[in-house]
Image 1 (cartoon, rainbow, N blue to C red):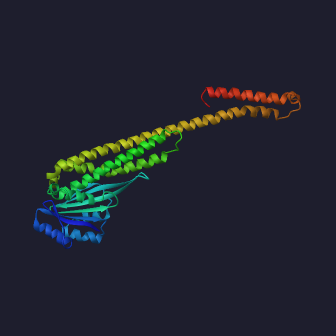
Image 2 (cartoon, rainbow, N blue to C red):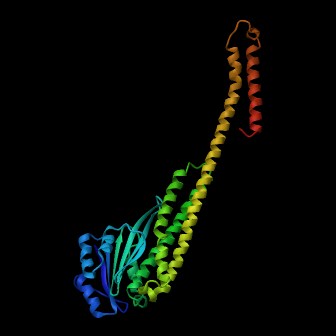
Length: 323
């Protein structure tokens, strides 16, 4: 589906009259301008029209429809193909859902294709249209703005994940809290998914910053700033992964300690109960020649012996920290 389309001349938006072919023809005719077509989850038939008009490589066109690509930058003749991973964070479940943004950049066109949730590009387009000086750089200004928006959102999600980790750490060291092993593993999986989105983007931006992408020569400084932000996010994600490893180790250790304490308490009470059980078992045999059976004080004496013996065992176990 086409979300938006326009021609930008000297940084100023001009509406398109007619279909997409007219837009690309107008951009080529005017010169010093480019057409920006925004698509959301296009079908094969919808994208085939754009592929034929721009003479896009079949492999790149196939990737645009099927999605599920890792972040990358590839060149097909005179067209750059860039893939970014967008993310959507759900506060209620702490789930990270990946989306995908693909950009086809040529001298006089930009085609953005978005799949899945996260990072709608309407805000990016408005930001660029409010800054004609940046738009004057042409198609690469769109690539910069999209990268900047995606990476900024990475930073927001990284801080959300950090707050979830803090809450988990509190639960780990709270003796009244339930077992949070499953929650730790779940958040760790989300962090690894986060890393799969942001980490492969680093070499892509490094290629641009090092000047190996000629089309981005005039916007290298802008991409340098984006790379700096991305490296900070990457450091946060690494720190989050280490914190979760430490939290899991501490949690398992505390669970093991608690289980040992429970076993010691169970064993201690079993030892205390064994004393009266042994005495009662002996007198329960009811042999004829057991003189204590005929004592008047036999029964109360047995109870007193049981109570004193249990008390002695209890004091010793408590002194040794078993109770």
